[in-house]
Length: 114
Picture 1: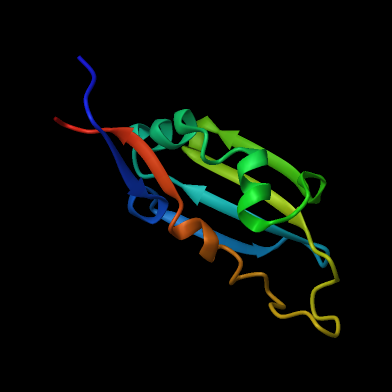
Picture 2: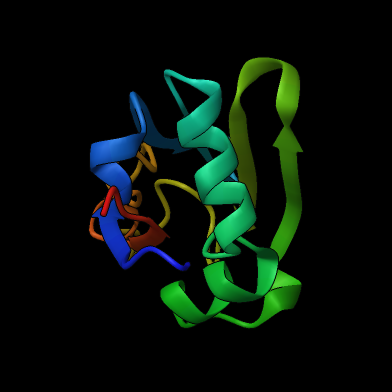
C-alpha cells in the first residue's frame, strides 16, 4: 500500500543553503544536510539536478560549470558562470551571497507517514 506523498521545502530539510563567489566570474552554491535521510530524500527526488537548477534559475545548462553530489559531506554543490565579472558595472551582487534565495522554497516530495 502506497503512502500519501508529502512535500517539504528545501530550507526545512537542509541545515545550510548558501551562495558565494568562486573567483570573479563564478558563483558557487552549497546545500548541506543535517541527516542522511534528508540528503537521500533530496537526491532521490531529483529536484536538485543540473537540469532542474538551470530551469529554476532560468539559465542555459551550459552556465552550470560544476554540479557535485558529495555523499561523504551530505552536500550538493554547484557552480554557475556569471554573466559579468564580480564588481563590474551592473553587477547586482558583488559577493554572490544573495543568489541562493530561489533554492529556499524548492518543493521536495517525499513519502508521508500515513
